[in-house]
Amino acid sequence: MSKHAIGFIGVGLMGHGMAKNLLEKGWKVTVLGHTNRAPVEDLVQRGAAEAKDVASLVAVSDIVILCVTGTPQVEDLVHRPGGILASCRSGQIVIDTSTCQPGSTRKLAEAFREKGVRFVDSPLTRTPVEAEQGRLNTLTGADPETFAEIEPLLRGFCENVFHVGDVGSGHTLKLVNNFLSIGSVSLYAEAVVACVKLGLDPRELVKLVSVGPVNSNMFQMAAGGASEGDFTRMKFALANAAKDVRYFIQEMTEAKFAGVVSSAVNQSLNQALALGFGAPDKLLASLVEAQAKLNNVTVPPKR
Image (cartoon, rainbow, N blue to C red; front, top):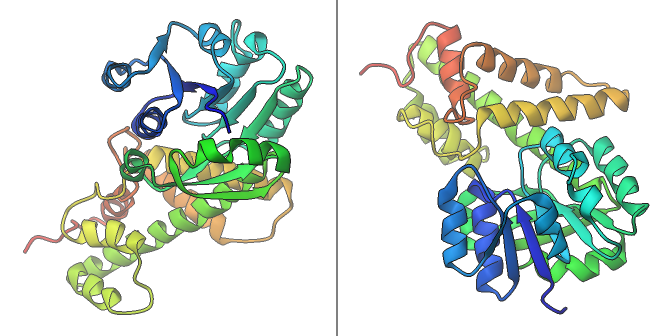
């Protein structure tokens, strides 16, 4: 694969590491200006160019990568005056690595198809730590020919690249994956707080689970950290987790899916937001703090 010119929109916590790895591996990268100037200026120092607006970025790019919060942000970038759809040209590829609603993804793909542009969903798993290391996972929804063309690019910032089906499949699998992981943290949060409510030290629960089959990196980041008063080990905002579960609920509703756990997880997140844990600095393990507040206890307990 020749080193296509890459336009990158969204050089935040995840995007900075992704763009940095592409630069280090020889791709020409143009980034869109960001309200947080630090990552943009760092990437420019590493050799990236900076575009003043979306149209300018699209004009110099063969492939445009999006790494933003979710569906509203992607739709705005695509449909705004001077946005990606208005500025693109036949033969380009747009890769959306955000976590979005699959129905919107398929509609966007159709709109781009009418202009001879391929739209691919390739959402990510893992954290900003792995983004900086070039060790993310990605779940790609694309036709086989397009996947073969972009796979070397994706491997520029990913350790594992999965081709999971046609357009929309990546976002669908990402929502299922995030429901599983976020639901696990909801369970851990209640278990940790239950220990305190019942007069137990939650560190003893962590010790027990750590030597048993339920142990996992997720458990250690969420419950292990919370039991020591550290709610920051899992670098995933609680508000973004709530958004992902809402997207999952919408997909399940449209599919007439019969289940009860997803509704409980959604309510757990909504309670946390209502209790004031939706600020950008409140991460997913703050579900423990929210459960503690609901139950009028302190985690970790005063010793």
